[in-house]
Amino acid sequence: MSATTAPQTLIDKIWNQHVIRELSDGRTLLHIDRHFLHDGTNRQAFDGLRRIQRPVRNLNLNFAVVDHILSTLPGRTGESHPPGIERIHALRDNCRQFSVQLFDVNDAQQGIAHVISPELGITLPGCTLVCGDSHTATNGGLGAMAWGIGTTEVMHVVAAQALLLRKQQQLRITFNGRIGPGVGAKDMILYFMARHGVTAGTGCAVEYAGPAIRALPIEARMTICNMSIEFGSRCGIVAPDDATLQYVAGRPYAPTGALWDRAVAEWQTLASDDGAPFDREIEIDCGRIGPQVTWGNSPQEAVAIDEPLPDPAAIADSARREALARAYSYMDLAPGRTMEGVPIDIAFIGSCTNSRLSDLEAAATVVRGRKVAKGVTALAVPGSMAVKAAAEAKGLDKVFRDAGFEWRNAGCSMCVGSNGDLVPPGKRSISTTNRNFEHRQGPHSRTHLAGPAMVAAAAVSGCITDVRKLIQ
Image 1 (tube, rainbow, N blue to C red):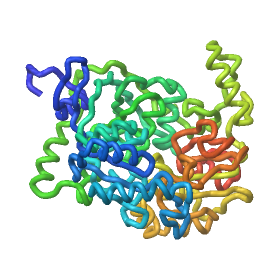
Image 2 (image 1 turned 90 degrees about the vertical axis):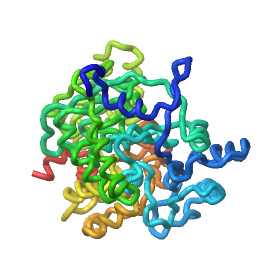
Image 3 (image 1 turned 180 degrees about the vertical axis):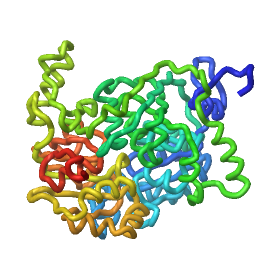
């Protein structure tokens, strides 16, 4: 940065590098470097291309995957979950007609879009990346500016490789200090939301910073960025560093040779300058964070495992008070108690939030040598077939199977409840997913969000448990 150049944030730098044209109405036409389609949002986009008689603008920048409505059962095919057959076949037909690369059901590289994009090197630091899924911000863990888009925008990207956008305000969340035993990335972001609410990031792109973020491995940074959407932001990002470069190097779609050297030189400039202006700043003391679990129907309704549940009567805002009362009724819980000891029926480890190899390893550390409690159904669902293969090479599948877990194939599974993996009505799930809304995992299901180790602890205990007691 020269003496005459104003300091810029990380997001400013990436945005400015991708501007095609600034319009008089305040919108900007922005180039999109990478685009992922999936089985849930592709048909309307390709139908639109046919209608306007246009090809896909840049074939090498668009990818597709089957992940949302796909069975994860052993031996699954695209026909294993009947409600998904039509959409899966439509995606196959569209990708064949328009020559878009598809990671299909039996592809060794198949998996959840936000898992396979980083692991294949499709996601790169400083790139713009979109997908018709709200948790696309996951890719920000690699220093990409990534966000979810609507169905109409999916068509715009495949047709023009660009989007019209209004630049958002910027929020920096700085995580200071060090996390303690039994605490991970999921606990950090749930703790933040419990204190600042699900509107904290509304209208903002978020940069995560601070020593605790820097200390996280790349996959944990993805977990943090994944949940940006849950507090109102479409985009969350962590500045790339040496750990990022080590993660990207050698991946199938990453640059090589002279292109790699040029890319690294560029990526090393991608950090917010000293004095760069943010519209808002929030700081978090990580030393105060204990293992978190949600109790209600919003990610902000989270507490530490040993923290009493809040009393709605103490809430001044009447709308918030009514929302808490409704959550207590739906979840069949009462104020004042702690979450420790709440019985569970289902334990789910998976989703784009927590289904990577490090997540499975964290859960396996708790599960090893123990058994799933009687009456509990436990699922371990890798985020990609590559993660599944890596886990099996380490013997993690045996650890889970020996304990009584179901070991599945890659897919969104019980996160979204649209692929046959459901929590039965009235049953209680503890889950590594990102949303605990009413009916999210099935009609009248009750969902508690937590990190992989906490879910594993509940699975072998039969109830929500302080994982620190099992890993001492």
